[in-house]
Length: 205
Image (cartoon, rainbow, N blue to C red; front, side):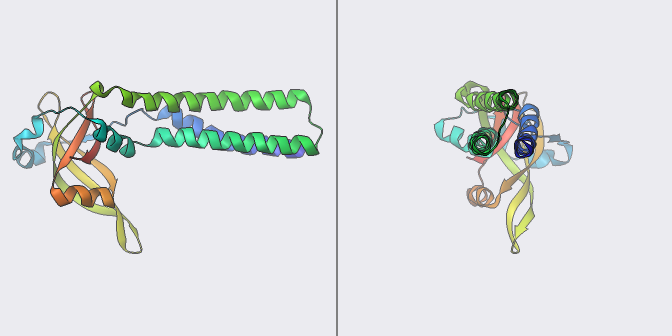
């Protein structure tokens, strides 16, 4: 019985943070907007930032790669459930466990898992409606490496300027992997994805 109790606590320790994370995260993150007034000159250099274009299938794949927390929720939930069921089967074979204890354990496991699975699935379906997304050009205002591995930068923080749906200049910061940074900077084409009128991600454009 002690093994079962310890195992139950271990599974809950894995699931509880995942439940909170799934409930607190937005389907599509809202990038924090900064004061645009110091950067008006740079943004106004490319007036076509205000030109809105629709996203296509390739854009949606890039957006989903940039916003991947919902896949993580689904994957972690499935893996935790596999661990829980296989572990429970092993414990039942070696210990006498009351049916009520197993029922409570499975009920709590099912309840937490249902929350994570529902949130993860609904987070994925948001990408099926492309009408909520559009993209426009952005301008790189500043960049700096923020994380290194073996003295090689692997993550960059970029400051991007563009226009919102009301044609007002907006500036926001985002951290992106080095391979995305170099791929975009190579052609100097920064595309800002807008979700329901707010900056949500940066993709190659």
